[in-house]
Image 1 (cartoon, rainbow, N blue to C red):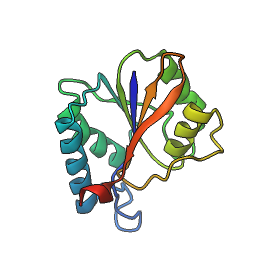
Image 2: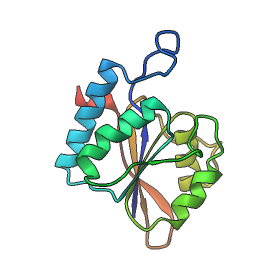
Image 3: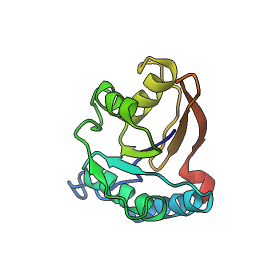
Length: 154
């Protein structure tokens, strides 16, 4: 099983728009990432997002390419300052490739919790629009397969 853990694309500042939708750059970055993932043959059976507009827009863009016909799921466990343990329990019960779209510091803490067992030992350098791919090994441990950041696509 694989997990694709995405920080939403670049969003408008709260002062410009309190709903914080994706900027034009954020939409373009997510479109390029979605195209890359599609071209790589990546498909997921679940797409989970935080419900915040910027995460919904990111999940929709990616889901349109790698989760055709799958209904997006909102989770109240993926907010920026949430404890990763809530989503960790959902991930443990999953049995198919899943895309999760959320925020920092939550996403970085989730990766650390899954890979090294301690969310305080940060091991990734997320930027808006980054994705980390984790794979569950035969001995039921998570390992990082790869990470992409949007500047690789420009």
